[in-house]
Image (cartoon, rainbow, N blue to C red; front, side, top):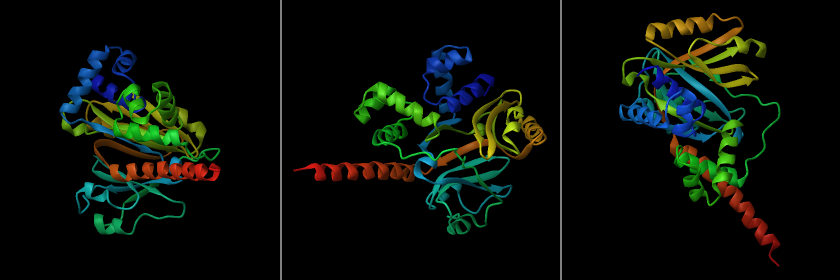
Length: 300
């Protein structure tokens, strides 16, 4: 994997729905070259597809990472997906296993987590951003568009429109807004250990104050998301080897105002796709029931 491969993967994280031509133009090469690299990364197993679904805010929930460090947990990490509330489970370097849970206010991690994993997590991180105003319920069309995107994340808007029964323009507008406003997540599932060469890393960096966030940056790194409350940034970048990865973590930890750093090199993400799909179907059914009820009331 080389620098251009890493830039392509970062661009897919930043703009997961952009065309090959758009991504290539951003990176300074052709759309054909972008697709060839995309296909090669998929064929060697570095790019294992996309993880998509509703954000916790869309469901009135919060997102919590349970981090297992250094020592393997008892089971195959993919076996954690049936646990209540699990959205995805990631494997990373340094050795860590991180299931992400969606939880209701006042709800704790499931008691069965200790039984499945053999022990409690080493760290628990609530990474839910606190918006200035509480977001409202998504519309029926929003949920339909999200369902189509989840089934085919890289499909064209024309293909998605055929699934939704909407126009391509409507699908593009709603899909892009859902992603922009943080109501839907979509990111490539990456395994950097599948090939030698450059290494892609990710870092969740929490700062003391929002004014400290602009200084959170390293060479060859890009911001994906920035939260004001709590002040935090999701950063992705690439380095030449694991020694440089450890140095990048130390440099981030040493930046002024940085309170906490969770640094990882992705080595596989396994989504609870059935649960994510069920949550979306439940919202679509909720709106269908309201529509049926309205029709029955208006019927003479």
